[in-house]
Image (cartoon, rainbow, N blue to C red):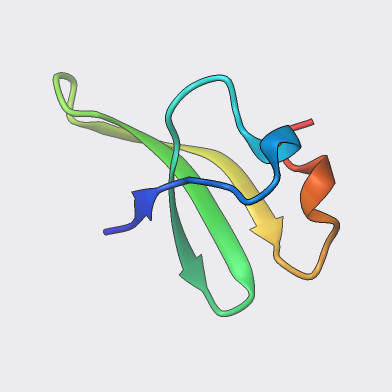
Length: 56
């Protein structure tokens, strides 16, 4: 559904691969475990906030 998250700011990069999709001004960052058929929400962001604080 979403794309692999590839941030503009290096400081916004998580320590593992995360996918992202958007709903309005909210970003939903998630991982997919295909072996266990599980989607885990990692982070929900209001995109109007500071992008340098993501995942901290």
